Length: 507
Ligand code: HEM
Image (cartoon, rainbow, N blue to C red; front, side):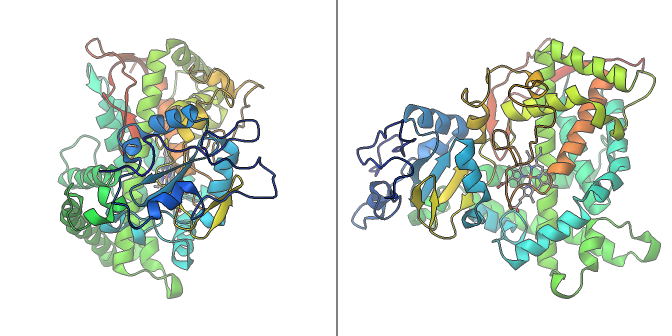
């Protein structure tokens, strides 16, 4: 198969001070002649030539740890600001620079997402994450913002998080165990509680909980795969990776599962209604009313998005405090001072746990669950990025992982130092990770940023504080902490963290 572009993606010039590596140079930024990236550009015109055979472009970049490969390519080509390449028929631009990231994430021209076949197959085009940015998407976001993610709703579900935290604390204490299993089940229970009003026991053999966990895991596996036919249309009929087949088997199971819960809610009357998100969706009237199919898609997306990310992040936090006993001691000293050993942590304590919150931010900096911000953006019209013309239909990605490890942006970026968020140098206590400062925006930015961010941070902050207040954490003797990553839909630890814990409060 013939490559259309060199094996490494051709660079876009950095700025006037960094000359372009490509032979097709552009004028410095600010020049009245704006360079075109598109039909007139050598980058994209080659691949649109009809006489060329189909090509895979730089597909290898997106296999494995894509965030690391893209960062390396951007460094090698001195194209951190903006780099362009092709994935088969798909034009892609990637930025590893905070200023350009702001342009991409906040511009209305990038308000859609490239829709993958798997996302269609799994019904996500009818849910918030992949719906095109029109009236339907706005309605869904506003319903979720009001009834699931508002400060009032988040504090309303506090008791739920408290109960699950207590379940987790009780469940630990066995010698040497994989913490991921506990965290995933706890996150699932949490989201099933706020969305469906369902309570599962943390470790009881509950068939329904096992069923939904299986559905989520299969969905994750499918959506996290690079589907060749998304970029190579000539393969579309073949389903070589079996992804379409697996989606067609999964969707009826999801439909049955979610519809069963919707029916249970419909049949409840009066004070049996719990006011959870399913009740809210069922109560919508007029233009906001959703069909049953749309409701299934929206509810399924919430379980799907809410379950894994939180567990993945807490596992990274625990790995880091085990590797850095000094950090663990500082968190626990803070807890002793702010909470005291005579009682457990309350969610209201977290606001005073400055160092603990810095620990979580530092973990998000070094191990963002979505290093490429999970789901890319799509140019819905011709637009300009960093002085370059970007044609409609281009996929745009932000390499948040690369930005968060850039020595021009962060001091000693490879060091794990929660203190950086407390000092006056690189940041301060109030450094916002919610999208206003693109040096660290693990939840994205702009209109399509993560709507679940406040709920996620409330959960992670409270659970991390509880787990560290109740126990001291160590690696198990058999399995030292291994920070190797694997990029599925989220970026997880490749070897699940195996720990031993020792009670701190005389439990
Ligand atoms: C640590 C936890 C989480 C992280 C790191 C995370 C990260 C992200 C990122 C990077 C995006 C894409 C943002 C963009 O394009 O600018 C996103 C979108 C989204 N997230 Fe999260 N997320 C987390 C938790 C959650 C939770 C708990 C929920 C819901 C229960 C959720 C629901 C969503 C949805 C629905 C979208 C799509 C938004 C849209 O396209 O309009 N996320 N998330």
